[in-house]
Length: 472
Image (cartoon, rainbow, N blue to C red; front, top):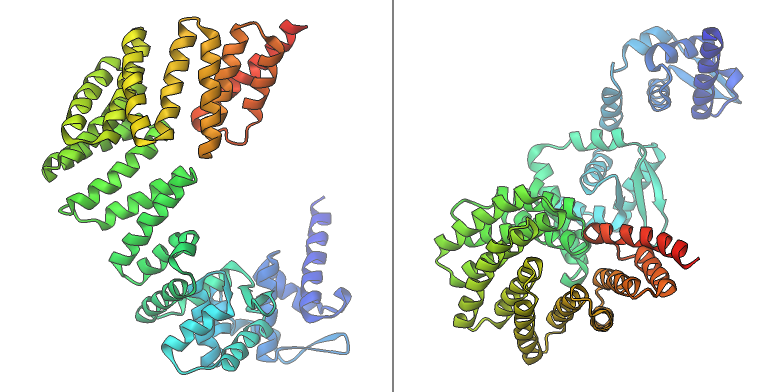
């Protein structure tokens, strides 16, 4: 078996070498095959780079489908760098200066790059026209350093290998690297207006970071974090928020408050209560240091939310009661409605349904005055939950159906999925088995399922199977 494996390995090396030399595999000289085995093992990319280097030295030549070794192959091999990185750097060093510059600019852009990006950055460093830049990019492709990714009019290329990209980037001097990263970042800002730039925020943050522009890096890292949070890419959002905090001085209290306030809500969604508690404590200190009453109110509301999800309903009610009074004093209707919202839920969990409905009614009054359909959705959710717990199931169905309607109007697919599950629970208890089965199936199939309603959706699927059995 070992002998067969060795023969198969030699055949593979011969095929790789033959493809690079454009000859038949049987025409590869045995001495060359042995050298490739010694230096490259079975690594196809390394075999390719060794052959390119040997041909550039003139030690290997192909003609009429045959391969010839010119001179002493061992001596030629001794002149080659010992590592793949050395081979790649040697190849780049042999390029004309203008082509080397194009390769460096391309490496700053990334593994894939466009002609327009390279030309823009090229023109920041030296006088150049489109024909000259196109020529350098064609040379890189002809030298098998890059490959064509997309033809005109959106001309773009990609590095032939990740190691080639890394090698080209390593040839940059520190000052040149900083200037090129700034130039590439500027290209994105020029090319894409504000309303089209959001998908490039992480890229802009990275480039400005390498350009050592702390202010611009922090700006785009924060925007990238908010964008990631909006699409529920929570791990990505946390990474960006962490970077923003690193770039924000301890004395910049308002800026640190804004970042921590946003990050605490990510931890809440993920259910990471220890980290959430840590951020809440920091927010309370910052709000006090800022002497900002509205900040103190907002943090107290977030503390109500935290206390509710850890099961401390007394603390939830205490925080929400203080927040409701403070919000009324400040004339902050948006905060007051949230305070009544958390009071209602804490009372529901404590079994005081009458008091919960009083807070829900106050929420409804404020929401209708403000025309706030989001908060009306929460009011109907509270009323539906209370009705279900009091076994007023027809009312519960009506309230939760209203929640579904409002969720659709507002485009809240996640909320819609949750409320479909609530309707399923209600009709199940009404013994409408077929309707319950169909409703639970809708909740389970909903594309809006997320981490926060996965348990409800999973329960819906199990109940759907149970309902089918009962209906039968």
